[in-house]
Length: 426
Image 1 (cartoon, helix red, strand yellow):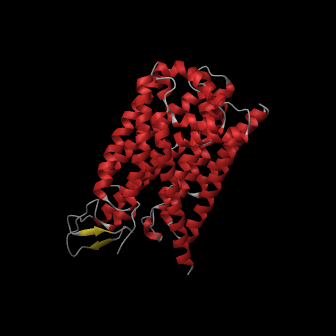
Image 2 (tube, rainbow, N blue to C red):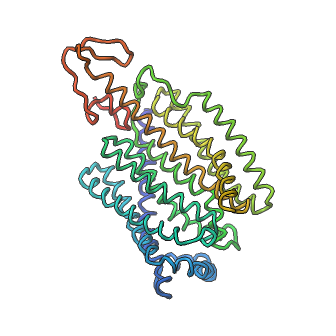
């Protein structure tokens, strides 16, 4: 009965999450597609501008529009390409999600090709804008320019690794990379929600101020959502999900060291922000609350997977937890680099470093998971491959006599599928 309740609970929350994501994406698509029209032709209809004027105030929108006319005007065509195709991605993403859920391989494949091409062209438009815009001229300044550039690179690399995983017949890794890619893309609609919501909670904030608050946590929120989705779709059970005799890549001593590093870096980040008064406290809160939620969920899931003997789940949660703990240290190092190499003031450099930390380290964690999966598959292939004498090496390194030749193909054996995010059947 408890098992049945768990399944029902997972299905209910999974459907609710899919419906929510699809609704947000479909609703945001026309906003993205029309966002740059007023810059090309003043007075042109723009759904996002109209909505913000109604929910906040016309002056709030007019002020933001006025500061963007110059920077956007120098790259208007690339920006329109970026925004229109960005809206298209909001529609192609749910199509990819639903075709995967409904198991429509042909539709999923062709819509995936369209999705990847659209990502590359859209990000080329964004890259052209960033190349033509000095960091200090970007919306909300240099910190915002840095996080835009980081999201661009992360989006392009994640969709590229997703393609390579699909070509290499690693469906589980393909799923993880594409979910991470879409997480980066979801920063756009989530930022628009904050444009409309934060001024209601904190009256008097300009859109530039909202951006400075939002970038403190958008990266951590979207990559954490991607991780939850990828883990929810991994339905493997049992201790054999990692080959017997192999050691974890996230042992407790490594996690302990990562926690010590996290504590030291977080202490520095907290102290630095508290010295800035009310504004620093606001930015610090925007960073710490989502970070603490992500940390608590990862710890609980890690312990639960360990108790239940789900060794692969424990491994993946452990790798992501270690990288999450290292994110503040990465942010501190990035802040020092930005301050010295780009000539940024200290507060801006710290905001930029904090804003990219969780997103970059989630990317690093996905790389580690990918390497772990490929390592496990190689072990499985070696275990099943016959030697010249007809002897097969077992996972426990004891040779056993093969009664017939064993052929190993990456896409077929259960031992390979076990390490690639696929449910084990039979």
